Length: 132
Image (cartoon, rainbow, N blue to C red):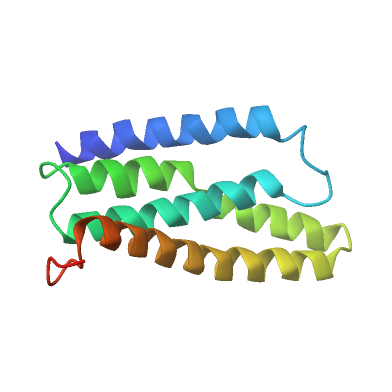
């Protein structure tokens, strides 16, 4: 049953990512992969919040974690596309921009995850103590 939750969540997440890419790729400046960057930052934020809520036992059933974390958010975010875009920037002799993209994506993702976790803690309390 958990595998089915991952399949369904992953399908929804990947479809949402694709729809966002279709709608925003043409509207963003062409020299920086803004859509992938924002999707991964939003996904990191969401995963930080979801993992905190899971730790506080605030998500339903045994399928909450596989559906939301591995499935939905895992399907929504994209490490592989991030790597390909980084390589494309390097191949286009834009190594400085590639380094900025890599560093800002990783640091920004960690910060976004921490913010998501903190906001979830403010809502439901600290996972280990139950207090806000």
